[in-house]
Length: 428
Image 1: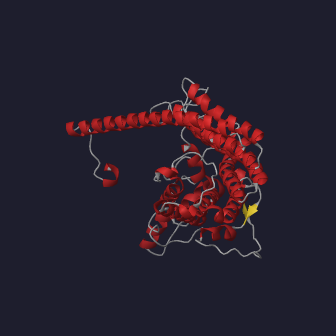
Image 2: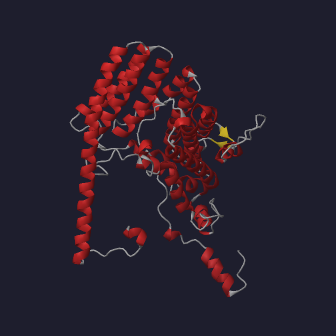
Image 3: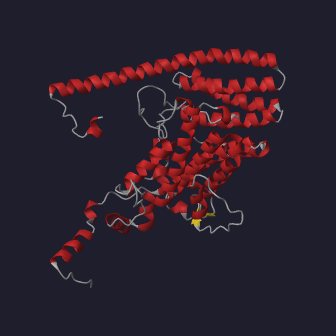
């Protein structure tokens, strides 16, 4: 028997704490049913054929389902781990991990997760950062435009904030992706001078996503602006990795694979910056088997293109053009398949083809085949002009569609058929 409340107020508080199970949402779906963006949509999520899968029925969702898996807004992992009653009782009592100090303190756990997603995946970036290609290029960061430098500093700070928030929320997948972003953005901001730090962060991202255990303190230090790494630090690795057998009872292996795909790419880029070409190539190659079962679409073929061109560049920098050419042409072929398909993503196809051709032209010049390189660059310029026209066409179509939708809403509001939202956040 439980204790009886001593007063009316006590009885009221006890009643408020009691969980009404009839109000709970349905339980999470089985782990094996969570396939993320590997499952194609029957209809495009946005107008146009840009998301059409190549040579098969269905449309790519733009990575939305994968993002949902990684962020886990509904706390499916925690619900499976704690059980529905314990989880929702803890949620009601505000006992689940979340930030409780500072500007984000008033926000519930779910809203803090949304903020985390925006930090990691925000589209609000400079035009220079929007290129889908993740090919490593050696850039002299000392001579960069101050505005670009400022932008990259801000983006690096955002990634560190994302890691800190991931740690508080106890979200290891987000921590792994945050570390990959820190690796990428350190290399972008500091250039080769930041390569060792970038490599360390990528290695830690892999550790979280792997089958072993990892040390929370060792991870959280990377959220500092200038982390001081103790070479004699002894790890206390007690947190299971995303592909550890205990983790796979709570979430699908796809979460680990998504994190590893990002971490291996940025580890390879850090190794390339350090001139460790064989290790970089070995790291890039680990991504290809994970991409093999994925559908062919613009988004994923950009990822494949980045890996293939990065592999080719490692060979080129070692003076092995014949091996490099094999991978350049594989990437170019993917782009041309989109261009030539009836329902391919023409814009992405042109972009993928020009990216691979441009790097192959540079490799030809590096190999002493100057005339061939120049001839190929002429083709690149012609294709780039075509790509620019295609992008302008897509932009015009999108603006026309948005204007049409806005006009419909305004007409409906004017006729009284639509109640305009009074909340400024909704209205805007």
